Length: 133
Image (cartoon, rainbow, N blue to C red):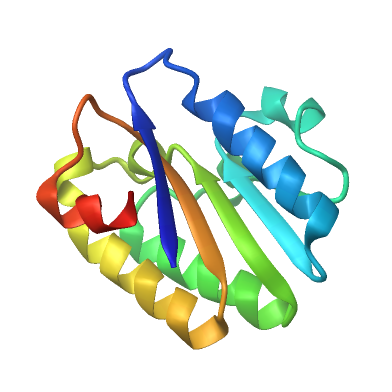
């Protein structure tokens, strides 16, 4: 399953996704991952969640990010939730161009029984994303 947190820049998306990740980290029987390109958020994310600074891995496109996710899931069989803050920004795409990567993330979610939560900077989401609201 994919969940979506959206809004304009400065609307509190990051605070909401961090709060959701921290809450889930307290209740999950497995591992919670939080992926972002902002190191300064590491102090806000619970130590019970695994904080991943995507910039440390030189991930800058969809063709790198999906294998990276697969590697994370393959290396840790008990991942229950993945929180991704700023996906469009760190893979260098516009929100309207995220349909294919969302489909791939949906497949990963179904195959591995992992819930994904994404933030999207947009006033309105494209039609293909409305099912994630």
